[in-house]
Length: 104
Image 1 (cartoon, rainbow, N blue to C red):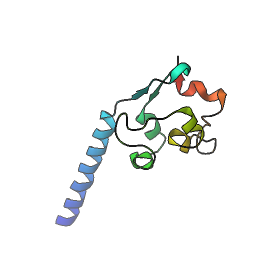
Image 2 (cartoon, rainbow, N blue to C red):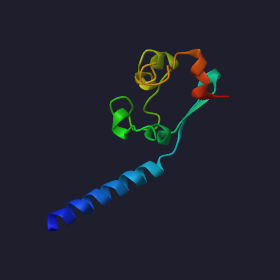
Image 3 (cartoon, rainbow, N blue to C red):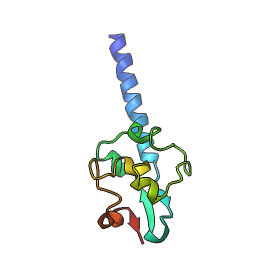
Image 4 (cartoon, one colour):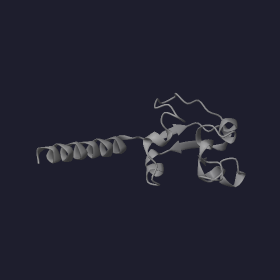
């Protein structure tokens, strides 16, 4: 009985920590050049079922400014392009999709 209680406490604390981490995440803004700024909101991606570990640390570093990227990188399948390739998610290199990320 004691083990079950300990496991239950661990699960509740873990869920609370994950929820707090999600709630504290602030959107990250990128200049975006002439195409307009890009605001990345973790909550949007997490709402689609992704977990932090799906992207961090394999694709992105967990440090603001730690991922200098250019559209060339994304179009080559790096950074956002690892998923936004037309298979997993909308294709970032398709001009019809620019406005999904870039806002003027």
